[in-house]
Structure formats: structure tokens, C-alpha cells
Length: 387
Image (cartoon, rainbow, N blue to C red; front, side):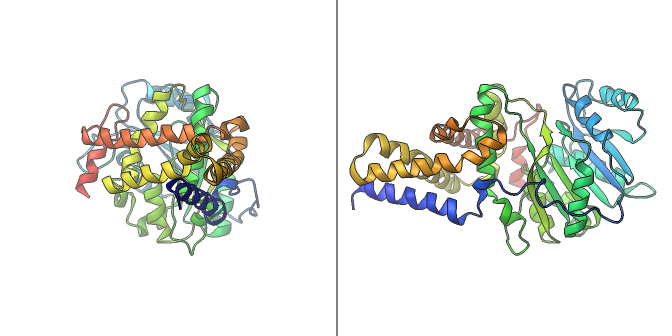
């Protein structure tokens, strides 16, 4: 067997496995608008915890959508102002006044102590405040300051949580896909996330695969306590997946796609997407050079080899390369439709994958420079060395 044929055979085998044996991740079938659960008999108290740092540009829309939830039970919101340098707190209070809502508490954040990731420290303060109330909530809605909710989101989340006795119910927010850069790179982010964590496997109690989407996580408070509290993941940069792993040890979890929850965060330039991915990619690889090398080889074989064989090889290797490229482009179509992007982006998925490969390498490089996890003006990744 020639080297070209060996590479082509391995690439085809990889794509057959991804399409047939990887939980059907590419079909994007796990959605909150399918198989709607029945409404619960009671509506437990919920407190939303929103860590916010320098979010003046989006906090009014995000917070307003939370305060307008048509949830039938008790619902309050705690916004933890994580030492913002802008008018985040003032805009939040004005938003509550406009909505004529007394449900909001703005909690000034304390300085970050050693051994904590910044977002989790802010979440910890909000959770502690909720638990210290005279009547603590049964559920916590852990969300981000750049997430907007349809009015019925919390009600449908709670219905699913109650019907499945779930300890964690999470939705992957619909990411903004408006600019050329977003059309090129954002659908692939969703595709790769589902490839890493097939939602069908996450939602199967017998499976060890666990994940969550940090923009929208409805958590049963007693389950969080049983899992060691939020401090159990205090060093995690990828806090949502870390929380998913912790909570799946306690009970069933569910993760799905949605049109009800959307991200307000724009990614108009290539550098914006690079920063988003590079911030945590090396953490995902557990700061392992061996895993980084394996990722480079795996992505090269799976995504870059097919077009290379198509353009440069001949005979059977070329035919197999074309077939792998067709499989790749076809598997990408459901995500492209979900994001409202052109199906033609499927053809250039190898180029898109090359960008994500470069972002992963950059993440390792930034970690070596001591700048890993750079976000909102702070470096957070070096806390991983305390694990």
C-alpha cells in the first residue's frame, strides 16, 4: 500500500466513524423544541446568577430579557459586578427600573483570590448570596451577561428539568452569525463542540460523556451542593464542561441546541474568534504537548488530507479523497442550516479547520508566554498549574 493510499484510507475511516459512530453529532438533533415535556405541577423558586465584567454594551438587552421571563414561580436575578471598569452596574440598575422590577440584586464583586478562575469566583459570590437568603431557591440559572432569552425560556427549561429529574439542563446559545467572519467560523465552532461532546451521549445517563454550555445552565441547587459546590471547579477555564462532569456524577444532565437563547457577543474580525478559541483551547487539551501534537495530526488527517489528496493525488487515493471531502461537506450542512449560513461553506470546511488548528497552536503558545486565558484584561490560565 502506498503512503497516499494509506492516508486516504485512514481519512475515509475517520469520516465513516464520525458520521456513523459518534452519536450522530452532525445531525444537530438534540434541540429544545423537539419532544416538548409536559408542564410541571409546581414551579420551584429560581435565582439567576449573572457574572458581569465590562458588559455595558450588552447588559441592558441581556438583563431585560431575564427580567421579562414569564416564569410562573418565584424568580430573582443576582448580577455580580465583577469590578467592571465601565457602567455595567449603573445600566443594570436602570434596566431594572425601566422594567419596574424588584427582582434584581446588583452585588459588587470582591477581588479575585489566588487559585480561582475569574468567572467562577464571580459565580461563587452570586451563589453564596442566593443561598444566604431566608428562602433559598431550589434551582440556579447560571448564565452569562451577553445572553438574551426569549420570554418562555425559563418555563420550558424547568419543564424539561422536572420531567427528566435533571440536575443540570443546559442550552447552547445561538451564536451571532451576521458578518462574513462569523459565517465562516461560527458554525464550525458549534460543529467542533458537538464533535467533542456529542449531545446524545451527554444526555444518556449511562454514558460518561458530560458537558454543558455556560451561557445557559439550569442547576438544581441541592445537586450542586452534593457535587462539592461551585468551588469544586474553581480552577477551570472551561467551567461549563467541568460543571457538567461534576453534576453528571450526581444525576442525569441534558444539553441541547436552541433558538430561544442567543448570544449578543459579536465576532466581526478573525482576531475576535481567535481570542475566543485560544483562551481555552490548550486547557481543553489539559496543557499536554502530546495531546496538542495528537490534535494536529488528527485534524490534518481528517480535514486537510481529503482536499490535499483530491488536488494532488491520482487514482484510488484521489477518489477516496474526493469521497471524504463530500462526506465532510455533507456532515456540515445541518449546522450551517441551523446558523443560517450558506451550504457552500461546507466545501471550505478544510480551510476553516486549518484556522481552528492554528488557534489551538496559538493557545499553547500564549500559555508558554504566561498569557493563557487572557480575557477581559486578566490572565487566568496559569491557575491550572495549581491543580
